[in-house]
Image (cartoon, rainbow over all chains, first blue to last red; front, side):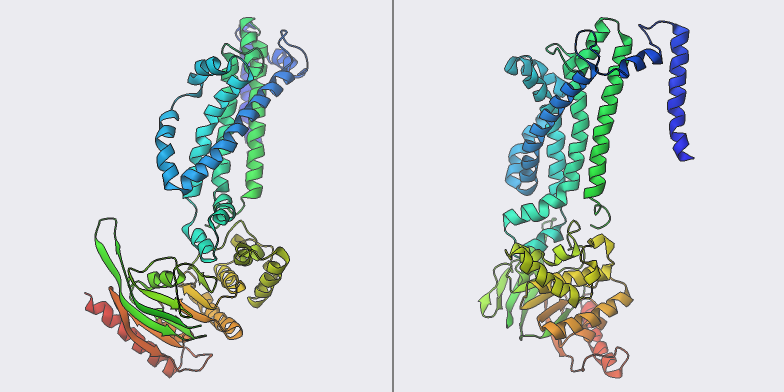
Length: 253
Length: 253
C-alpha cells in the first residue's frame, strides 16, 4: 500500500502539468510533457549547437568530482588536525568561521580574475562550496570520538599515529562521510549556478541558460530533470555505502 | 610482580574553580597473583586511583610502583578493562581481541593465533567474525577481558567491569572471571561499588573512606572458592564491609 502511495503525488503533478500545458497552449511558458520527453529520450543529440545532453552532464559531473575531490583531500586532513590538536583549531577556526558564510558564487569574480574563464575557476567555486562542510563535519566527528576508545588505545601503548589511523579515523568515518554526502549536493548546486554565469560555454548549467535565450523551454526542463536524476543517483550511492560500511553506527556507542 | 602504592594523593580543580581533594593518602602493597577488590562510598576516588595505577592519570603526590619501577605512563605489563563501550564497533570480535597485539607490532598470524586462544578461553569461538553490536553486554565484557589477557599483562586493572550488567549476568560473569583467573593467574585489582561482588571475588578487600580518601580497613576474605553467597561466613564478611562503608557515609553527613 505504501509503495503505491509514493507514486500518487508524482502522477497528479504530471497530469496537472499536461492539463495546464494544453490549456495554456504556450510552449514558451510551459511545454507539454511529450516535448520534454523527446529531448530526454535522445540524450546524445546535439542541442542548439552546445553539445548533447549527455556531453553536458558528463562535463558538469567531471567538474563536480574534480572540485569535490580537491576539497576532500584538503578538508579531511585539516579537520582531523583541528579536531585532535587544540593549537590547530585555535589557529584555523577564526578564518574558517569568517569565510564559511560567504556564498560560493560570491567568489566567482575573483575566480575569473585569478584563473580566467574555464575549468579552474568552476572547480574553484565548487571547492569553496564543499570545503567548509567537510571540514566542520570532520572536526565534529573527531571531537565526538568516545573517550574510552582513545584511552583503551593508550592503555595498550598505541602511539599517536596508531591512535589516528586505528581509532580516530574509523570512529569519525561515519560523520566525515555525512559531510561528504552533504558536500556533494552542494557541489551540484555550485556547478550548475557557476555554469549559468558568464564565463562558461559548456555543461548543463550553460545548456539551460542557452536554451532560455533561445526560448527552448523543453530543453530547460529536460536539463533540470537530468540534474535532479544525477544528484539523486550520487546521493543514493553514498547512502548505500553508508549502510554497508557503518552498520555499527548508532547501535553501539 | 609486586604492585606498590605509596602515599598517593590526588586533587583536582572543578570547572567552578573549587579544589577537590579526591584521594587523601593511600598506600598498599599487592603481592603477585593476588585478587584485590577496592570498595568505597561513591566519589571516593576508586576509579581515579585505578587510572593512576594504569598510567592514565598523574597523582598530585606519592607514587605507584610495579616490580620496583615507578609507573609514569601506560605499560604493557598492565591492562585495563573499562565499565563498558570500550570495544571498537567497527572491528570484528577477533580483531578487537587482537587490538593490543596489533598496536604492539605483533605480526598478523601470530596475533590471530593468540586472539583465538583467548576467544576459546571465554567460550565465544563462534563469534569470531561477529561485531560488538551483535553481542550481549555480558559477552562484550568477556571480549574486553580476552583483549586484556591477549597482551599477557602481569596486572589486570578492572574498573567496575560488570557494573552495567543485570544481576544474573553479573553473577555468572563473576564466576567466569574467577575461572579465567585460576587458569591465567594474573594479579587483579578490581574496583566495584558492590560489596557482594567484592566478597565473592577478592582475596583481600580494601575499603576506602570518604574523600579525601584513605584505606579505612583491609579485610582478608579467608573463604575457599567457589564461595557460597548464601553461607553464614559470606554474610558475616559482607556485613562487616557494609558496616564500614555505611559508617563512612554517615560520618560525612
